[in-house]
Image (tube, rainbow, N blue to C red):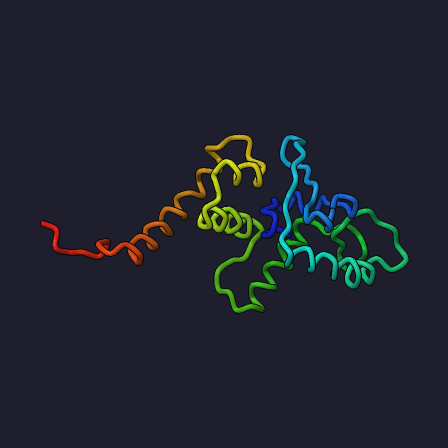
Length: 163
């Protein structure tokens, strides 16, 4: 869900069950400055959340009552530190040598959207950035991807007979 919707870790752990609309494939997020926005979820994320709600959350909750969507092993709200630990362990288990963090997933979300042709203003809205300049930091990565695609695809990009 961090990657699927490009959420900040603080937004993820603040989600309550009522903030999720799996039929619409979206989550209602309270972002910075108490601004509400909608985070979109693709089919993979929707299926994963459905499985978690059906199997994982109910097992973690036990006899407790909680509004939090994401629960820790004691049945309480998952914390930012808990997410950091989960991501770190998952990265190591997957054999990823670089650090896996919530920010890396958010950055990847934005970069992949831009690489896929998304409009910068749409990415700004999805990330919950108040200022377009904040979103533009992700374009330098996309520009390097643009150069790679250009070099591979343009018939004259590799010409080296220039004076």
